[in-house]
Image (cartoon, rainbow, N blue to C red; front, top):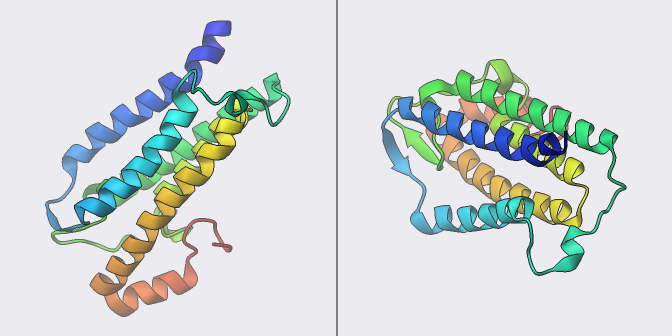
Length: 190
């Protein structure tokens, strides 16, 4: 059973990434693309977070100390939260369809999607990812998860702010009305 605890999260995240790459094949043609320095900055911060969660040994011992007592409850609770977050982001990805991209873009014939998970929050893919990262950090129970989570949040928040600016520019008052009635990440809060 130890193999399950060792491999559950890596297999889950790899399966998610494979799905994400395959789903990206049907995206619309890009009309406007985020600058290369912006993409690199976000990616580097994000990848540092990924390294913290996935590398078995970084030469900073305190990162591997537990901030909460590891138990079956923390593992399975974290696993359930991670799966729920990933499923929510997959639902959002399916719902946005060909308008999706990994970078901040405006697509040709870009549509503003406000239904499905986009009726709950404006950036449900990020909501799902942040939920999944929080679940993984809980299951891990080590300080490296607590350090990685703010890096993911910063990277996604930076991207969200740029997307918001571009969506307001593209959709004007329609987007302003949508954002007044729909939270960015957490329904009725943020």
